[in-house]
Amino acid sequence: MDNATESDTPSTTTDAPRVLLVEDNANNRRIVQALLKRLRITPTIDEDGAAAVNAFKYGSFDLILMDIQMPNMEGLEASRRIREIEYQESRGRTPIVAVTANSMPEDRDACERAGMDYFLAKPLRCEPFLNAVDQWLHCEQEREVATSANVTQVPETIDWSDLARLGRDIGPEVIPELVENFSQDLSESNALLDEYLAAGQIEDLTRLAHTPKGLRCNLWCAAAVSKCRTC
Image 1 (cartoon, helix red, strand yellow):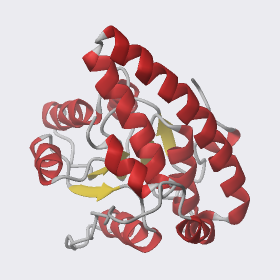
Image 2 (cartoon, rainbow, N blue to C red):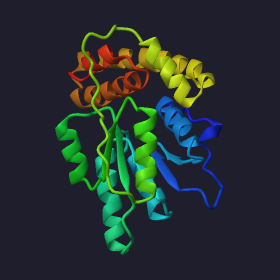
Image 3 (cartoon, rainbow, N blue to C red):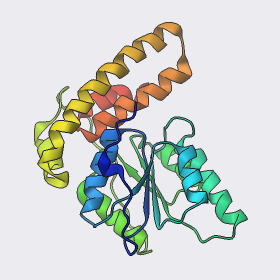
Image 4 (tube, helix red, strand yellow):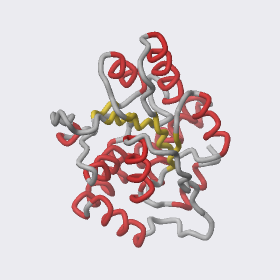
């Protein structure tokens, strides 16, 4: 399902940092776009790893923000192929920052082995995210950013105080659209999860379970995220 909007259009400002955002979910893209707007950055957007590799092969970027689980080609494989292109074409190294709902130590290790430089876990927090983007755009020394969230003793529904903080980060006018998209996508995902589970389609089930997990992370449904981690 393509939920891209007009705001997905790449920037034409020649002196602006060139950031490639690779993310298959429209809500997550909107959140990252709104945060990057604070740095006066309008990213180029691709919705899967294969498209990102193609964009990198024929383009030039200062930073890549890469989701991990995506259709067609996941982020780890895309990162490996980007590093191969750099080696084969004697290019300089472009920083790749993983932006993912998977925040376990083994996930970090997998990102490092794939050639990624840094790791940010969803839900994204405004200050750590912007600090990380600024740091890698200016080649500063890597700083540790806390990425794990406490998911115990949290209500099953959206935490509205945290959602209000998200509104302050990205703009309150975006929140109704995010919640509406979230509800629609979650309903469709739950129906498909039941279908895949009944048919024993484990690979499809695992891939689809990641989608509501990422959505719930960015909308602060922490208890629901904890359940999704078992998928």
